Length: 167
Image (cartoon, rainbow, N blue to C red; front, side, top):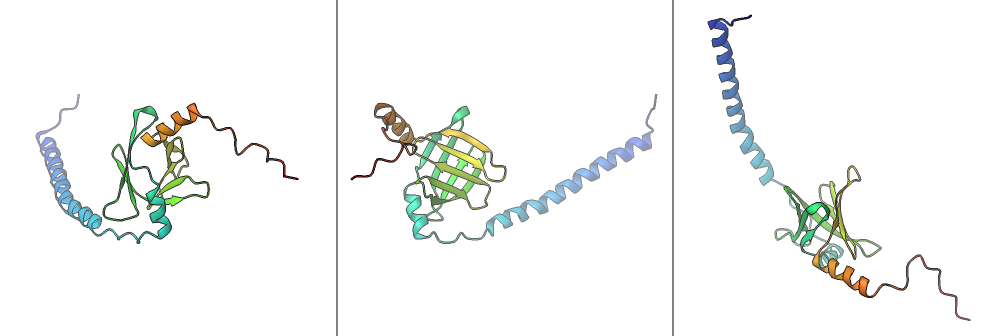
């Protein structure tokens, strides 16, 4: 069996100590650089009238999602017309967009996430992979809409045949 010599143990201890010191020194330079880069973030462009109008239709507050997850949607107080979205430890700054179907789209300004709000639910998508990050998210207003639809189901659908033309 190999028995390390005293010199081998000393050089191993010195190497570990030097590595730890270098790591601590590097960390003291990196942390301020990261903080400075965050502080120098580019200001967001002013929201257009269309974006402001879409922001007025966003459902702000907490959303309960499938799997026990919770989304939080709040106004961005630093950037009028923008929205802050939080899911667990992730956070995004979103730009509200009104779609042609009437759905509200909250598009991540870094183009990584997309929240879609429709009448009865919301879903958060990863734009890069096209996968849903969370689904079945419901704001109190969406829960109320679902209950109303249960009581008074719609009698028409976009899939119904068009009504006959009047003669």
